[in-house]
Length: 166
Image 1 (cartoon, rainbow, N blue to C red):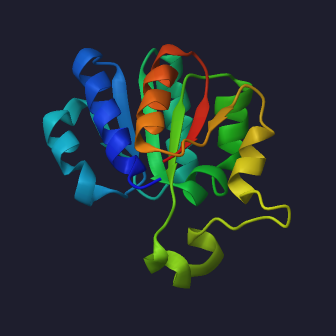
Image 2: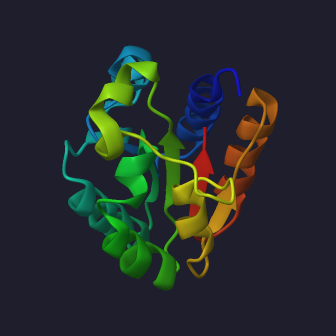
């Protein structure tokens, strides 16, 4: 997909305009393209920092309180570090948390396994395989910006957790 982040931001802005319960939660990433959203919706934006486990538990708690959290960070920081919280607090609890994973660019390759998702021997991405095994988790892999935006808007209407790669 050429620019999934653009589709994500467009859809999220539409949702935040009409629903004050829509909340963007980030893990200290994406500032260069999220600045306009942060300024426009300061009460609908939280940077949890580099505390992935806390971010997932926090999002689950907010969802149970009626908020609509949209968690955005690098794919590996959604799946690997906080897997227990994603599994227990979001998937098994069937909370309405939408997880948005973005791949690291070539600039992150030198950081190795901590910042990159690798392909399994069968050709599947390791994060996708893990997330599809979770109960209640809807995994979406949109291939175009248009399909990504549509998926985000559809997930707003659906109760339950989702993992969307953008």
